[in-house]
Image 1: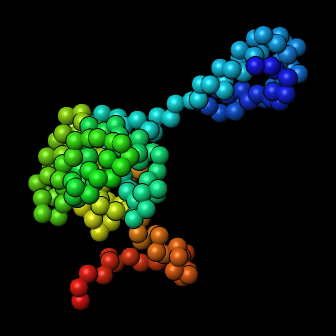
Image 2: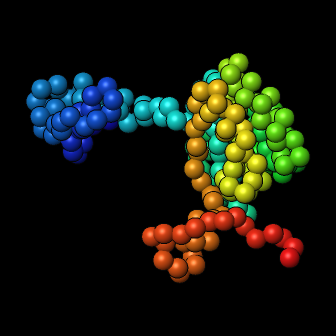
Image 3: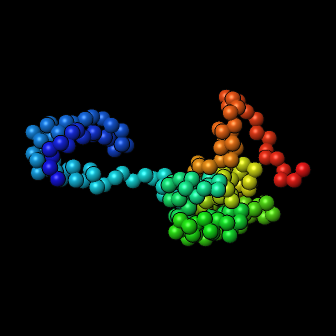
Length: 195
C-alpha cells in the first residue's frame, strides 16, 4: 500500500479518544514510506473490538427483538443472542425460529406468564453462578407488557448486573408515528385483545 494520498491519521489513547492528528506529509518525513505503509495496513485491517458485543459471565441481557420485520434486529442483539449461555423466552418455538433464521443456536428456556415467578428465581440463580442469560419476548422489549420484569427484579435483588440491549419497542414505534406531542406521555398498558 502506498502512503500517497493517505491524508491524515488520528492518534488515540488507550481508551480510543482522539488526542492528535498527523498529516501524511508529517508521517512520510518522520517514518519513511515503508513503515508508513505497514502502519496504514495495520490500521485498516485491525478494527477495534467492541466489548458490548460479547456477553459477560453472571450478567442478564434484556434484549429487544423485532416487531414483525426481522431486519430490525440490531447487530448487538444478534451478537449477544449468539453468544449467551442460554436464552429465556416467551415461546421457544417463536424464538427458536427467529434464531435459526439468523443461523444462531442457543439453549432456550421457556419463560412466560404461567411460569414467570418460579423460573425468574431459577434463572437468577444460574446468573449468580456465572451463566450469561438473555431474556427476550416474542416481539419487542421484554418487561413492557411482556414477561421480564420479575427476572430483572430477581437479579437486582441479588446485586447482579442487568444490561439492556435496545431495539424495537411497540410503544415507542406507535408513538413516533401517531402525530401526537411526545414531550410527555403516559403508558398504562396495552388494550386487552378482547373487550
